[in-house]
Image (cartoon, rainbow, N blue to C red):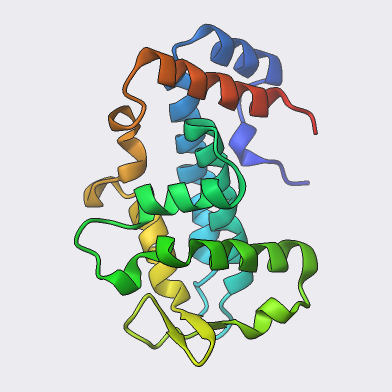
Length: 195
């Protein structure tokens, strides 16, 4: 039997108590550390075999993290939350326009909904993958082509401290005690929700 390694070595009661009684940084750093140490390893592994890339799983995983963080940090969900995450953490100053995925955030969000909830849908005719193109994305003949490797690399860059680790620079975004407390509250509500 395997276990969920993100919850190892700490009981539910202990973790809940720790999150409730601690400063906001405790739950924020716990969430980010868990994503980086467990979930991102699985997301990165989706492309380990170039002959069998798991592109749909990569998009689902990145989207899950984007919405989790956007809800926790900003109280934004859905397409607005996804776009906010991409703008702040994946689109970097100096990136060319074709690597600014926030430009096509609504299309990627819709594509993720197709993958997760509908699978066979007309939207599949409007999204394509091209691992060989140098652009991050481009529109051509009514189709948005995405280079999933560039998309994944930009997502992982947000967690890479040697490349600026934008995700860890949350004090530059959550700049007041009230913003930090609001983030803690949202994250704690999600943690204890038994949906």
